[in-house]
Length: 140
Ligand SMILES: Cc1cc2nc3c(=O)[nH]c(=O)nc-3n(C[C@H](O)[C@H](O)[C@H](O)COP(=O)(O)O)c2cc1C
Image 1 (cartoon, helix red, strand yellow):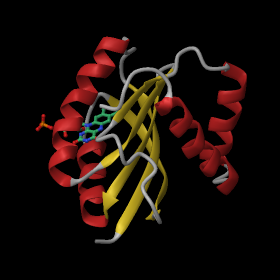
Image 2 (cartoon, protein in one colour):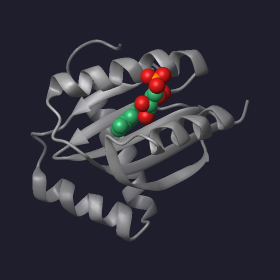
Image 3 (cartoon, protein in one colour):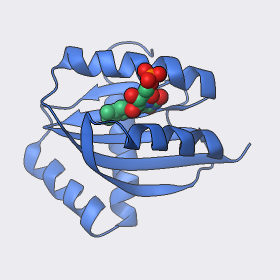
Image 4 (cartoon, protein in one colour):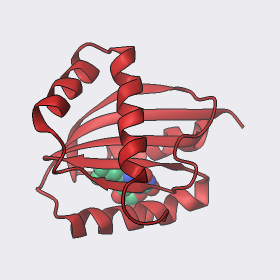
């Protein structure tokens, strides 16, 4: 198995409530469990950021499915490459509803991640998502 990670950002087509995010993620978790995918999906003020981890081929198939989904658009894949160890190994897809994060800080870092292809911003993104994933409730 060639362990792989993809990270993308996109624009949501609709405003999502926490319940709508949960519904989307519940479906994703069922599919991911079948293909050994783990990761996190953050929704933040109308935007998604998602980390997808697993076997190379499974990650590419998952990305392709997600890319065809009309519930979001303007998908930008920031990273699609090898991974040493899973960061979200406990979660078939951890939902992170980040509406209350510090807005200017997150906006600035989002811009650097997408516009400047900044390695530091990529590491920060994964670390931020891991940290938020650890907050509230048990692994699902
Ligand atoms: C932001 C976003 C994240 C998604 N994440 C996943 C995912 O991690 N795994 C997955 O299988 N589908 C994911 N989906 C859903 C797929 O795009 C697609 O709807 C689903 O795989 C189709 O499954 P079904 O037709 O069998 O219900 C995501 C969709 C969106 C909009």
